[in-house]
Image (cartoon, rainbow, N blue to C red; front, side, top):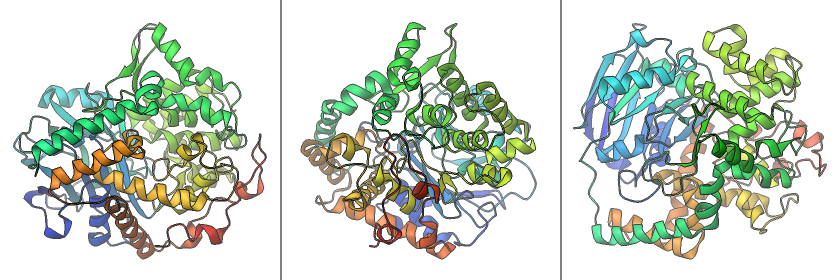
Length: 572
């Protein structure tokens, strides 16, 4: 259990034992706790007092399936509050194998130079000058870095958007094939990395210093049982391997909750053209891979490798949220254009969700027409060119709304909503409004409650409780490194029991069923405390007014959850 500390002001690196107050924490639990304890809440997110924390989950680096999720946290330049952005790929496993609990990057370069943070196979860290790579996009740079440092390396990299310190800038993470197509997309973490002066982080994947497991045999048996639960669940064992997350396009449209044309409709015209079924059929005919292994130790294989009409690789993975943001919100129903937009976002290092919604707002404001794919591509390319319009788009929907004086901007705390309209899914209205992260698709998505029939998405009853419980559960899951999708297995008795045994075998603890949600509550309390210190109040836990005044077709509902009810959601 080691911390690597990097001070960009004096260019020093140090490795040391994890302080006692942070022992037992991983992932989001670690990023949020460190930020709340060590980052001045009112600091400039792009200044030297902010810290960028990179933490694998507590189970990353073990043999447990689907545990290669890394948490990247800082004070967000987008929301002004605390942020944890979660990415897949290979980074978390690589850090876990090295016994690295977190990388803490502080200070700020004063020489206008760029650097690579290199972590070798023994876990030693060094800074390497990288100004020659200024302006490079992520695909070309990642290829160069793998040639330089070896193919068995995990890469975290920013593109031009991160160098420009744009509020939607992502940190791109390499997948198992070494492509920078996984993203810590939300909250502008790429801008913080750029402000620190770091262009890329290169981590050797061949470490053999993983933290010890208290009960290796017990862990092995419990891990096997949990893997069986993941395979047995219909969502992770059947739907996702066949269609990926894109399989949700049809389901959410059928519920009338697919925000379209800048959230003016709940069903996308022509959604069948961009559905998971359409994507799988088209990509299969072209020779693409619809069940790609994208992240270390994944047994779900929800990823895909999208190819063009000539069979050439375009992007991986084309996910549900991106199909929505670049398709539903913009009215673009051409999968080839959506795939190209996804690739451009990854290459320039911007969040596909915040950026797609920004384009949708620009379309709604009349800058370009809904459905104009070529104009959308031009807007994205301008981000990389650093034009005035490109920087506005790259700073997100609020910046676009302010520039064009347009009021229909679907954000909370500056961050765009996700692919579930809060008028069609009232529980997600609660999550968007009250999550410390801003509107978020992983912080407390209540979709599962609706798909199972346990809750009526159009009625206010039970929504606050459902959101609260899901936010607590997801905060706990984000501590472990477990993939959100694999966490569906936790909802079954067998899966939940096996996971608890995994945790106890790993750490030699006696955790009971109530201890996992207690971990989630602890994390949320840390995040809420930071946001209060940063100056955020209940007034920031609100949806834009149009969600209350503009009924959403086809159900013609508005948000029905009152501000007073919202204030009770996370009132621990």
